[in-house]
Image 1 (spheres, helix red, strand yellow):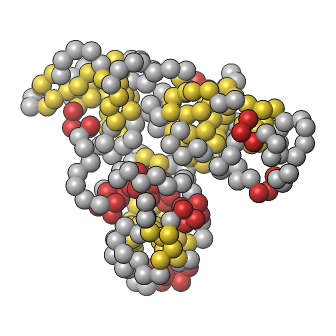
Image 2 (image 1 turned 180 degrees about the horizontal axis):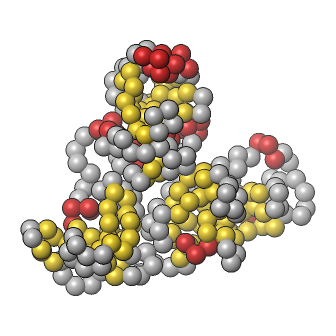
Image 3 (image 1 turned 90 degrees about the vertical axis):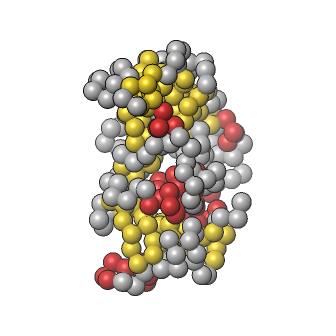
Length: 291
């Protein structure tokens, strides 16, 4: 029988303290007092903080973006235990942020780094929701509205509320590569566990940049290093790994990364300056996508 330490709690939903586990782990955990939980479909109604425990003071381990799918393992009055749909990361979110269903219709995925939904098709109208790259809304009924040369699309937010978002927020990602995309996040604030342009961490940036080009990689830096093919000489688009950290290479020496040293997304050059020297000395390797 598999012992508990060999099961990564970032990949499998099990909580030894509360004796909770997803049904897929039956027969793999020691003890007979587990409560086995069957996942149910759910969706985020806004950007939700995914926490390590059902407590507002607990560490944020990731985020769920508006309209993203989750697997709901347990839903109480205040907290819900979920796994994120895009990468299967378990954590706790506040229950009032989880929807049981979404409105039917065509899904529109936000491609702007940050965006707002408005009460009316006018930039002076009240903002009713914050959106970001990867968030999903549903196309609403009615026609687009052109105002001042701007094209507005009627949408339904995840909770079903009607709103308006400018069409430019749904344009296809412009041509370029993962490095070009990552550079769009320059000066975005650093937030532990963040994965949007409202605030992100190092592995959130690399995961978002790869996802923009259809490359699915895990949430955390060490898991990303395991996933990619190790290389000795980096090239543009490769990931650079450090103890508890990851960055995206722009060439053989320059790297863009979200970091707590500057508390924002910056570009560093290996070996240049005190910070660049520390990065060069602590780099544990490079990884390349071969999917």
